[in-house]
Image (cartoon, rainbow, N blue to C red; front, side, top):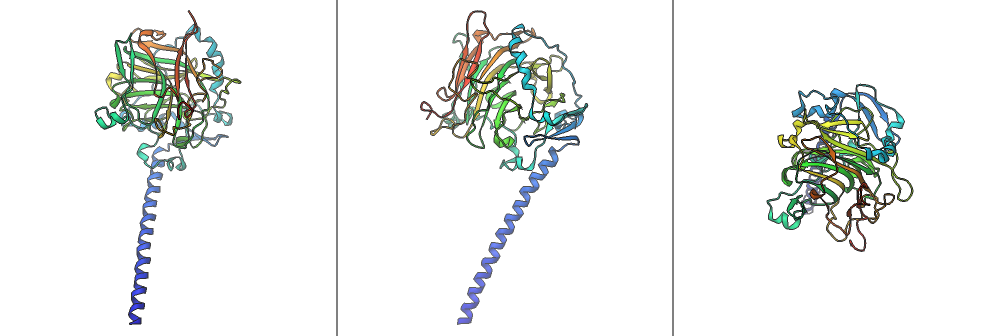
Length: 434
């Protein structure tokens, strides 16, 4: 009897060890599979490197042959011929002089102190395994969260449509639901546009959690919320994507409201870079400090009427590259229907209590003072089809803020014949935004 009990107990122990070993082996196998997936993603993203530059902020900048950059791995760009320069001539506005003379400071990115890329190459910020490991789903790496489908009644209750009334209260514009996003923006709409322009102050707002981000940017868009086409650029603080809380220059694109297409910078195929000096996703060397120093840069997104590519230009004449027309629908090639300037915060604690403390802009309460509140000035729209840069038509613009007590927006007119400025931002959680 004792022998039988001894045998049964030992058998249970052996079975237990075998079961545990099976679970461990399964976990190890699954873990290996995960790492193989990450390594596979890295191999796909890595391109032949002519030169590598180690930046003092920890980034590695790879100088990649311009014809081997990530864009050309997109199926729609397999036979694409690089457009080295746009067909349009850059037109200047006389009122730009104040901002342009100072904004050249912002051309300095931290990596540029450590070297430069040779002729015939473009600088690409290297994506490493540690960057990918911050994402549970590699399919969502480098993408914004998608818009909620407009035809879902449950989603409409959770995330109601964002609407804006313009044109003397005669036109209602639906901006669409944006789950976990809070925006404070100036919007120009109703007509078709061939471009957008603005000078953006550069700050480093607090970002509370590693999976949240804050931006100040321009949007050029077309389409309904569920199939929104958008090209965007500005500055961003995004620890999940970049691994730190530095203020970085970014681009973004999508043709379906970020459901399946698009990404930041060069983390997927799409944006064609032609400039050898500016790196998408790289940190700026200087930022504004409220009441002390002020740094800003000018961005222009403009459609080339010959190719229908959307070109990105910084400051006076630094043409960074373009989003090819083949990435988008024919309708977007005809022009944009929505232009936006301002800021955006992404967080799982938007419209909730307690609200996120992630800030927007300078992080301070809104004050119509260029030295303390983030702003966009020199705001222009490129009229379609005249090709003229003009002030937005007052009848077709409006300000919009998802959470006015958290992040505010104000289009400020200082007086007759003076340049208006759009101020935006806020601290996030505060007594009025608990």
